[in-house]
Amino acid sequence: MSKAKKRIPAILICIGTAALVYFAGYIPFYTYQEEVLHTTQEQFFSADHLVKLLPFVIIVLLAAACILILLQIREFAAWKRKDDKRYRRLKTKPKGSKVIGQKRSVFMTVRWCCMIVFSLLVMFGGIVLGFHLAGIAFPVLACPTNLDQMVESSCYFLAHIPALFEEYSAGGIILFFVSTIGFAVLLGRVICGFLCPMGLIQDIMDKIRQKSGTEGIRMNEKRHNLLKPVKWLLVFLMLGITFAGGEFCSFCPALATSPVLAGLSVSLYLSGFMMIFVLVSSFFKRRFWCSICPMGLLIGLTHKISPFRIKKDVQSCTECGACYEACPMGVKIIYTEREKSDVTDMNCIMCGECIRKCPEDNALAMTFAGKTLFRASRKQILSGFENRKAQKGGDVQ
Image (cartoon, rainbow, N blue to C red):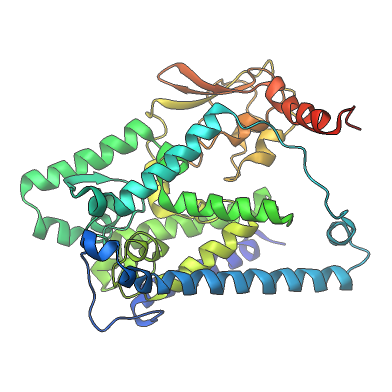
């Protein structure tokens, strides 16, 4: 197949995505007569608050229905393609079989605690604690339509640049860009792996898939490359669609998380359908939305100067490929690099999965300003076998 023909699917996806973003405000999912953009503590802890969660409940139920339908389709495909080894494996997998897991490392425990605490603070902190850090903008998809969250979110004003200059004074505009760029440089895509509420939701969906014993979709290099033009397109649309009369926020799935979960009566348009897409896609492929997230890509542009780094000891690496298989973002440089020690990539969300799955001592490590935070350990890999051995009271076969 020629290169021109290979580009056709990506071009069609980009055209379709651009059309959806532009007309997002014309595709209603759940609308209110009057939108409520503030919630008091009394309202937040009332029974009426549960009613306002109805849109998110509908989204979750529809996503669950879509997942079940897709699983049935895959079951049918397995029956139709009995000669295909990959499909046959789905049918012949022993019931009750479990993957031998590792002990949860301190790093992973801290990461999950950070995601949960920050997500709760962003969505509910302003309401429960009663204060708001006005003017300080955090580069994360926490949806500033929720005016009662703890901090400003950069994405709204980046998608409405004219409004930024209309609503803020010169000092406010400077504070917005300084705080946004400052956090992006200081933390890099640690924001995506540790702090983003959308990231937490996707990781929860991945955990549900693992607990259910469902096989996910393998993303090879070709499939990841197909998504590259889409994420760059979303960046340009987010930054410029407002000048063409479009509304990027009506497309963004974050609109269905922070505002709705905080009990705000916010009308959802295509954003509601997008949230269903995020839940379904992240069930089958971990962090799918992060692969095309425009805010994540903008944060990733600072990866060259961020103090958080992924380091590789090329002498210790045995080229087993475990790091590449574990990476939800398809970062291949951690596997292919044979000379440089710094393998930090703009797509890396600093989740630490590559390090956790690396079987060679010190072959991979995450550092902050030169200080090691998490390093690969063969003992950590073998901890799962030790656990299984202790449970069975004998050798693991």
